[in-house]
Image (tube, rainbow over all chains, first blue to last red; front, side):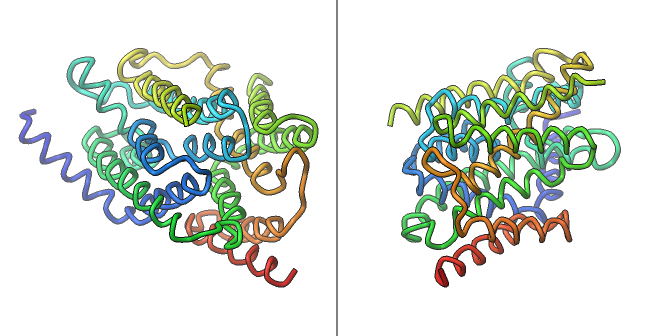
Length: 220
Length: 104
């Protein structure tokens, strides 16, 4: 395939993702608002969106820091949240063309949404993954930056119920995972561990300890 | 400030490696079954823990306040419409919590 043809197919991928652009845009704005409320700083928040490009892990890390958790707890929460990308990236390993460097760069465009879109036809398509990933990346970074400005203008975020809104955000991200019995059990166990540990351990520790609930996966 | 940047750099590097795992390092080799089942549960487990801390977490204690009815309203919304749009669910939680705070 010529590079001109590849560029053309990537443009089709961008177009595939356009109707879904509003969700990620608002998600990015929310992250900017949260980061601002947590005192992360506009530059740091935007750099994080540009280098991590994985919403839930960014929300997780900032939430832990905001609650007074340690650096290690924040890192572990985000790393645990993003470990799923190992499994996800293996499913699309064979669709990336070119040498190692190119594959390294293009694989960064794997996010939940671009991955899901690229597999809609029943087999994973490189052009849709890269095209939609590019669009989502630009939206994510730009909306984070705008969100930090918006956060400044909003004033006291908790008075507006934003703290509850971010709990609802995690709940909405959780909902699609709660299909199998095992996922429900693991999530319930994690919630239980967090509830029990919150009054007796420093902030951030309950979340990291709750990760142990994934060991339910070892059960037959 | 340095704490924040440490988190950003470490999480950033880890995420780059995770996303490159298949296309650059492992190729088509599937993860061992047990690793796969554990890794698959990590995201829902961490999200459940975050829901709890963000709903009832306080300064080293559980705190039942106006966040609870807000998150309950969000949960009810998701129970009715599992695919409800993120921003709508967030708005419902925010509005309910803000109203309870005004009344209380």
